[in-house]
Length: 326
Image (cartoon, rainbow, N blue to C red; front, side, top):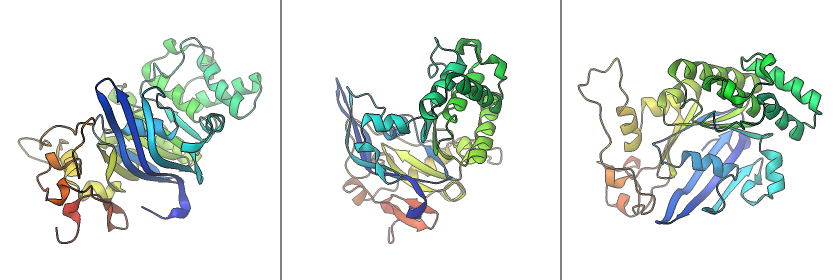
């Protein structure tokens, strides 16, 4: 979608299925996505769109007993992570690519002190001894606003916001090139959310880390990200700069998402809701997955999945109605 030379991570034709008792669930469907060096990219969509599955798929952390990567390439620095050995993947996880998980309570191990959990990452990837790793862990805690004197406290002794800060410290321990944040503020109150977002913004600037921010909150995307990818039924349907996509949405689904947000400047009596139900991942419709809910659909929409087309240098959309003559 942009210049190839600066691409850090490139996902091509990525397909993931889940085997369940009720059938095969199509979680990711021929997804294409690129993240550039130093880029902050927001991945937005409704619950069930496949955002978290995409993140876990990048790191090959999907449950092996039920998930299957059917096809696709996950290139990191030109190397396909989809074909890497587990040993090589473990070298990359936590070092080159780190992840902040959604729930700060369950993402930390309750039987280890927070200092030990941060130091563990440093001992593995930076080859520091125990004393050096604990000293560095204390510095990282101070970086995220927690006194280093609390290094020997356990996760249950911290609030939700402080636990998330510890998760961020652990994720940034090795100065990763790519940070994946999966709904990092969902479990937090509004005031703490703002603090965490401000912290992530300053740390990303400090470390020049590429960021993949996964959320359903468009406000967070506008605050933290330069670019945005809109996801529906396991695939990207619109991509561009936040300014371009939010001011001039092209896909009917993106228009629906933005139309459902209340605004102090808008005097509408009612918000605009997207009609119908989210596409059933067990039985996705032919053609464009959004066409059963779309008021702009044409005959092609019901037969052939649309390819991504360029609106301008900073805006792309996968929609038959946006092509010339439609």
